Amino acid sequence: MQAFPVPPQEIYETPTNTTAAAIMLVVIGVSFVGLYAGAFALRRRFGTWVPLAVALGATFCAFLEPLPDVVANLWYYEPGQKSIYSSYENSMPIWVFFSYAVYYGGIGLTLWWLIEQGWTRRKIAIVLAGPLYLYLAGGELFFMHVMEQYTYHGPGAFKLADYPMWIPLMNLTIVLWVGAGAARIRRSLPTGDQLIPAFLLPGFAMTVGLIFLPCLTWTVIHSTDPSQGLVYAATLVTIALEIAAMYAAMRLFPAEGFAPLAPKPAAAVPVTAPQAESVTG
Image (tube, rainbow, N blue to C red; front, side):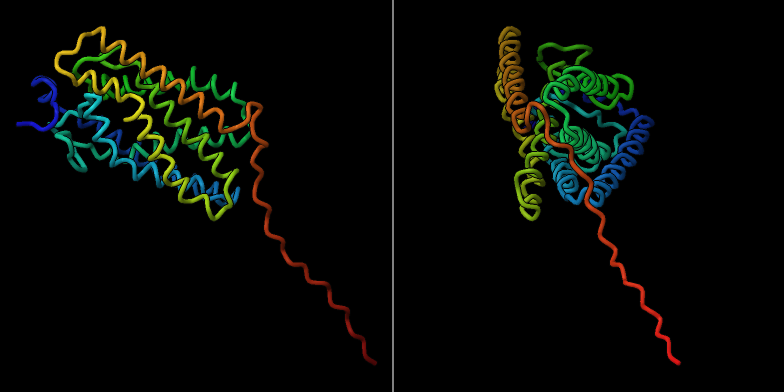
């Protein structure tokens, strides 16, 4: 007997697009290396380890992925898939593991950078509600229907081409908490005390965003034969909680924005006074 829900047979037996998976692995791999290179560059330029700690924390959180997948009824196609591990009856592709750092860590640190550069709450809100929402939603639809890597099954609300369109709100909440939380940590704690909170920040944001806020929706869609009206009602509650969580994250930085982060002062080069020539004779 299966311990966790699996999709219908036609989804369970759908083969992975192995060519697309190979392309995604290369793209994610290059982006993963770029993320860490950028974190080290920020360390040298601004003298803070916060970006690197956030990147490490987001990478570690890849082990969280199977749990939200199973409660969200997200299924990675298995035939032909190159997986890194299997858990909760679902096999995790290699590219998914490294995508956590790129997706949550990379986008979160991009928001951190904007907040540290003095962006106001209004400008951040416009980015979240406009281009970033469209990017996150469009990206998943692309992965599902063009790259053919996974799908969502089972009951759900506000779906477009099998994709629950409220999922990007859940991810926006996470990356905003990563970005705003990292900025607040760097500005509020001494340098030596920043590393552990910054490392734990992605895990906190993902646990709240992927599990806690949508827990009512996850419970309802896994109930015995839930009505569609109940699914929509639970999802609306989740959407309201996500918006409230984003509102709270916005309060981690001033409405008019922080003073822009200044580069680390260059180390002074000692200047040796010229020696006067001694004249004898």
